[in-house]
Length: 113
Image (cartoon, rainbow, N blue to C red; front, side, top):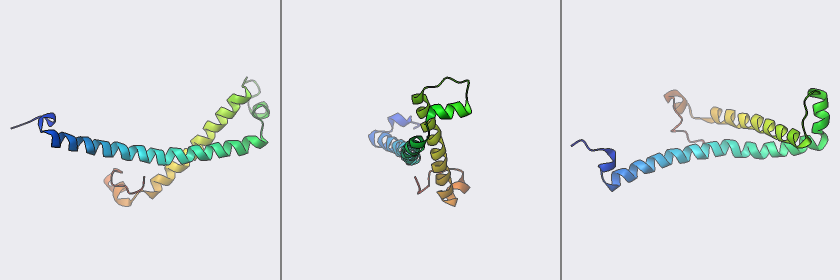
């Protein structure tokens, strides 16, 4: 009577697929809730920062011997702002997790994305 999970019938296989999809969807929503706002904030921070600061002048102050273009300076600045804002969003998500999820050692029961 020991059957493989694939041979349990259409209902058993479909339910297992739905559970896996629900877990994956939660992870995608969670990462989206962390990365999308931080991407937006990094874009705004990059525009505000580089409206006043020229990447070439900043390079001359910090890394004189490094050859870097203006566009590369904008790119590096954006990714640095994105890393900072993403870590802030991640830290906020960690602090907002319910205590029962933290005590269990997982975040599957988390009501917060």
